Image (tube, rainbow over all chains, first blue to last red; front, top):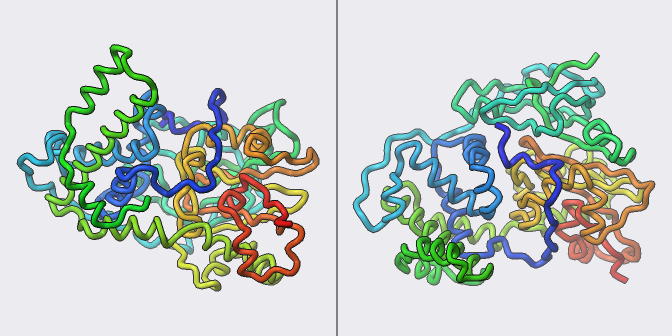
Amino acid sequence: MNGMHDVGGMGGFTLPVRDPDEPPFKYEWEALVFAANQAFHGPWPVDRRRFAIESMPPDLYLSTSYFGRWLWRFEKLLVEDGLATEEELRNPDGPMSPAADFQPFVRDAVDHTIPPKFRVGDDVLVKNEHPTGHTRVPRYVRGRRGTIHLDHGVYDLPDTVAHGLDPKPQHCYAVIFRASELWGARANPRDWIYVDLWDDYLLADS
Amino acid sequence: MTEDKVSRREFLAKTSLAASTAVAAAATATGQVGAQEVEEYAQSDYSVRAKALVSVLTKKNLIDPTEIDEVIEFYETRVGPHIGARLVARSWVDPEFRERLLSDANAAATELGIERRRDLVAVANTPQVHNLVVCTLCSCYPWFILGLPPTWYKDAPYRARAVIDPRGVLKEFGTELDEGVEVRVWDSTAEVRYIVIPVRPQGTDGMTEGQLQALVTRDSMIGAERLKSPV
């Protein structure tokens, strides 16, 4: 979806100062949220978890810290799938209902013999689609022309996996774009942008 | 974070300050608190909710609480940029390894005994080429060789600007590139993870591989800085 997460190319932000000694977790709660996320072998593929964050209202997304978004997502998915209730999360010392049954998500091995639609060096056009579900095509490359630079091999398609549909395994490529193709006259002619894109996102550009 | 496991359990055991959210909202609405206090209130709210989350997951047998400690210990002490630095330093002293690293980083990592949890691609900086890695959509990052990403990598400003103004980002980060240098920005939108192999700094000819590893910074392997000569 065209969510707040898709920030590539936006102006108006201020870069922070880099801290070379920053610890992995700034606060104890961040470590807890991160570790709970790793320790819960739940029913959600990574793309469903990403889609939950992409669905955050834009103002909430921007005003919530990184691990705060993880916490919001965890609560949301638990409630959506009947694994916990909002009341239980608000009052963990109160009565607990049993969690709904679920199957832990396991990624099936993909078939690496699936043929690619494109070869290195092929010119491609990124489809100009604006799906309401999950996708990994940033808005800034939609409808833009690039060239296949590297074939990464076969991976499941995030757009379907996120929603529990047929994973449609297919080739994913690093596609190279001239900066001017994406950003127009302001671009430096010596800048290049590489974006990893799946077969289904691309058309042959003849 | 320096707390040991006991203090982590104590932290979890401290009972809820459930009223903190309401207090924060009321105080902010009346303009009685400054930004610092708002931040503190927000942190106490996150803290209450995080503890509640772990408590609910534990009571419902959805997680094993000992795994919480193991995960935190792993990411705080075992993985980090020192692993990526081994790939970089080896590539500086062994030209054939460098070729293998750049053509098949997965095999090269395995060769050094690095546990590979993701598919990896290595891209090399030269005096004429500078690579920069970003994830504009979320925070994809090679955890297994660099540890968890820094906050600036995960937050919107870097993600927004790295693709449209990489030279401006680098300049603000302290690296001014010559106009003739080619810039390649890698937006990690899929399952592959990228590591930048920085240029070996001048004045390091007599150094051992171990000494070279110590020179390699996390940010140089993201492409956010170039390494300076140690002399």
